[in-house]
Image 1 (cartoon, rainbow, N blue to C red):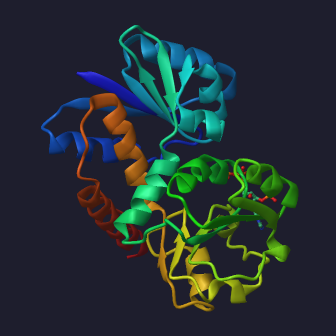
Image 2 (image 1 turned 90 degrees about the vertical axis):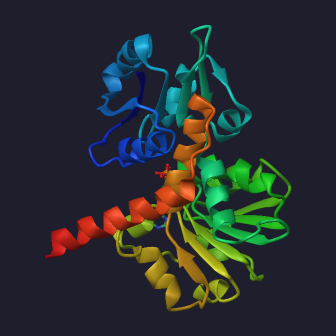
Length: 276
Ligand code: ATR
């Protein structure tokens, strides 16, 4: 049986084991996929021990930068993102590091019927999550991407990647119509509103929060007051980045839309059970 894992800290609530089992079932494959809690001090040893038999791993916070250092070879997306969320053990024993987060976001946006080509994008936040998805967003040839961040310097740094990207502070976002607004900040996890001019949201047709929750995200609910755009959370991105990892490991493309629906139903029923 092929063995896979996701490493992170915390990791107990990771949906990845379930998502990968849903994928494997579609092909009648039997795989082992564990969630493994790693500590900073021992993470290298844990990776080494795992890859004695492990075929591949996902890596989540806070080890994506470590995984970047750990990999023997890096894909273009991993290099551009400076972070790795997927490790693949190759036939010669070397470990390839890739980053499927951006592909996951872009595929989910396409699933939602939105074409990024020639569109104007407002990306809120300039942390690891934003850096990870920027190369894949650019691959769709948008008209423009404005990265806006509380700390403007970080946005300016990200903007160096392409002349199509501008970096600015949250309070200085250029007034132009944005077709899609993407939240990559962690502000809404803490139920904090972003210090942006809310009239910037009004022309958007799609608002996408890279975070997800059973009953809508704080960011999306907040935006709905100022925009009639459709709002989506990051559950589809989670499944799509996993599907891209599964393909890298097993050469099989799962039906991810089915798994997005299954996972959504499961999360909603868990949330109802908690409330009642
Ligand atoms: P991640 O890897 O998930 O992106 P991160 O690198 O810690 O996490 O980045 C968090 C992002 O959320 C950053 O863009 C951060 O802004 P700063 O770079 O200025 O810190 C943003 N963020 C977090 N809390 C915020 C808040 N209350 N208001 C605005 N931005 C916030």
